[in-house]
Length: 285
Ligand SMILES: [Zn+2]
Image (cartoon, rainbow, N blue to C red):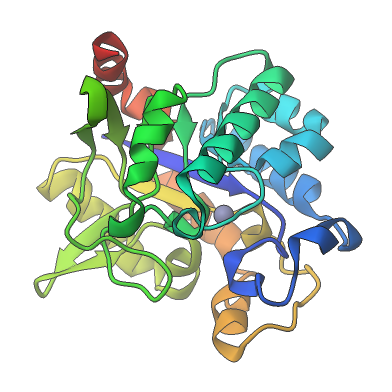
């Protein structure tokens, strides 16, 4: 069973948890560590002969085209993480469209290939921003991976399906939605998907969760992480207690956890894991 490994390429100070402290206009004043930490991930993936999907910010692709080219040259899939990590439900549909179009073009120009996948900042496609799926399909995206079927203070759409699903949109368009993985436990959807959950939860639980999805439910899981999660030496940002806890806990352990997951499960990029459904959407549009 193949699972999808996805990396959201952004720097440690760009995350939504610190958006109150770090303003977009000041991004270029912070020490950038995204190149080094992404390269570390590329090396670990090479060692384990694993390819992934890299959802990359347009801002990063503009400033570090060499990094984006390197990701592509090493056989990984490039996809869009929006331009400047703004939450979709805070944007108007018009602004979202411009942001999405601009970022797709920036990444495509750098790699010389089409970008068909999108992931919103902080999984901000929720019940109230579902209109974003229509815009993504209109702008040429084939799949989206922005819905997290859990309850959370910043994101989550608990009623959404737990697994890949072709969503029927306006004007008979379609998009493939690839929700982040959860496991059913005590009648709830529990996130086992990566990021903070990968850092905070015991590896044993994550392995059990993925095994459960693969073997019992016979479905692929989608894992995500960020380059800054394998960079324990990153400068600390002054955020709220909760944001700092979520961001900084177990940064030293993530790299090893990823390695162990790669030793125990098979991972591939979205475009491989969901190739059949991607084809189906392409044929329909
Ligand atoms: Zn992000």
